[in-house]
Length: 110
Figure 1: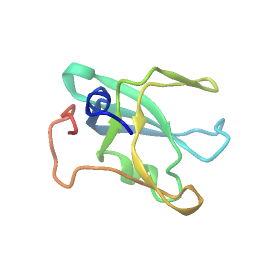
Figure 2 (figure 1 turned 90 degrees about the horizontal axis):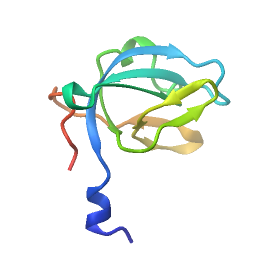
Figure 3 (figure 1 turned 60 degrees about the horizontal axis):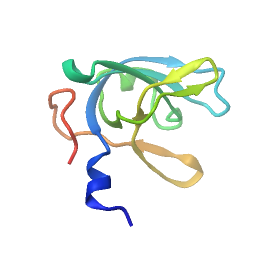
């Protein structure tokens, strides 16, 4: 079991996707995302295996939930700086977690 104190250490924040690029070097189909988390956190990059459900065009401007306080992770030549969250269905079919209303980038999820 995770304690409440441990849970509070995880920083889940709202960010807006600014840029989406193909990631042909990835082992599984993925996009490279550039996400704005507001003034305090800034712009972060990550990759996400969300090509089954999302086109690059529909992701631009979408607000998503991500963990922003994990260590950076090298994925091939790409450095991932946050972890985008989503529900994982059969065969790694991922639906992104998002806000149902537009909110300020960087707001903490609690």
